[in-house]
Image: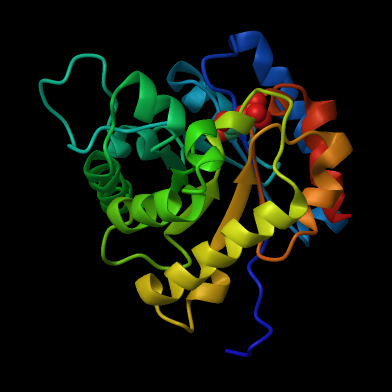
Length: 255
Ligand SMILES: O=C(CO)COP(=O)(O)O
């Protein structure tokens, strides 16, 4: 492996609790705009709500757009009403799953240990785990950003991570859905620290190839600047992933 090895960028959409069957036409429209030149450069992923995983995977056939879940249970099956396992997501056509999103950490009190177990479940089912980390506004204001993110990384990423089975998403909680983003310099500082931590976690040969996504108010208008930041290997997009025009406008940062 050469020192200049770079990951293949990933532009991922997290639809959160948005999207009815009618939203599937957006996936078809994204596919139509995902032309051969862009396909050579980047990967695209859409993570719809659970009921749409199977039809989204069907809608994405032939588009090279991957489909993922937004969460999974740590167990394979059993008496866990309302939960969905990584194996079920894989069976429905998913190849990725987001774990430890800040909305799960807040709404469902998910700890790093829970996120770690979910990432292991993802790997057991053959899925790539997108492990989310990020500081709150208060943590940033008191200068704890790097310490908080480092602790989340160490607690949330299981042993056995590789560049193929792990994606890290840095999502400052205060930037999500807020129309606010950190400065390019602030993003660079956090991503550089994540890369350094990854060298300890996956080793120095593999670490440069792990994709580190930035998430939080990514839009077509700021994507080029954010995607140009060193150690930013793509985006995890919320609101702007719901419409093909916005999502493909963000992907166009890689044209
Ligand atoms: O949480 C996010 C993606 O997981 C980011 O959401 P927004 O792009 O809507 O800020």
